Length: 316
Image 1 (cartoon, rainbow, N blue to C red):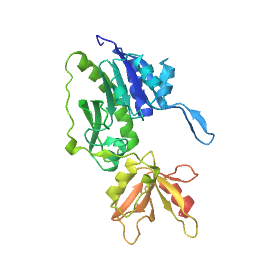
Image 2: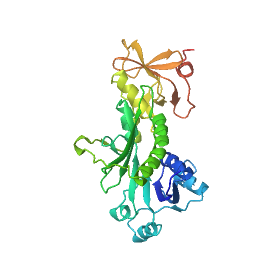
Image 3: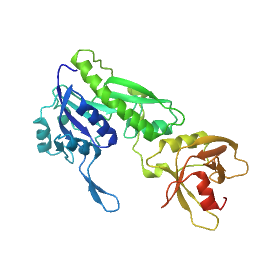
Image 4: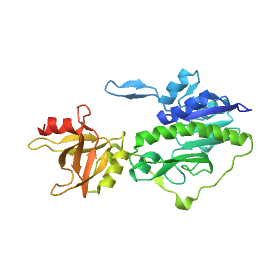
């Protein structure tokens, strides 16, 4: 058990952040005295108002919730200052914090970033690492500065990416890594073991925010690059393309990660659905056949390759 119970204000919005908040709520070494998250949004067909995952966790644990649009209004800054936190713990909050906010905690503001900084600064580090075919990613706990993910690094832990891992799986594993690393950071500070290492800006890379359109698959690429793209875009925004059945309109197909096949393309043009291979859907790339584990036609349920070629290509 930690000797001191740090007062923490947590800032985050999506599932990645809520997992980290759950770890901190259960830890004896701190007290989460407030949770900042993005304002409630309308979404879905019924345009219902939904709370963020962080707000859901906060409400369940009787943690006061704050949802400012930004910190341009001095009243919002003063409200945070009045909480007198020891640490700000920030994870995928979705707001750029001004220096007036970063100066508030008695000890320091720290950020949980899902990459091995200085690689993949920015909004989509997990997607970019998987889509680029990287063999490793990780979590970096850093002291926050006004620049985008430029602060000095405090604690870092790596995570391997296997050839068949996809973004959703790596996302969940990193979230489970992030909570304990925040605890480790606070404990190291408490007993004087915390070291600070500046980032090497000369080797920094940037992970730009994703758009839904980036999920479009280019079948003219080699099969390994197609595999990385599908893994990197799964489950969001989803890897897709438009397949045109003979004599019919194009259908949007979303593919789930599978594996590069050994089969040669032959005379099949890139993007051609070659057939079913042990339940997987085979599609021609530049060099080999890609085998998708599942396919979801627009407006229909997800199905395997055998069901697709039977239902959509009359090859039962």
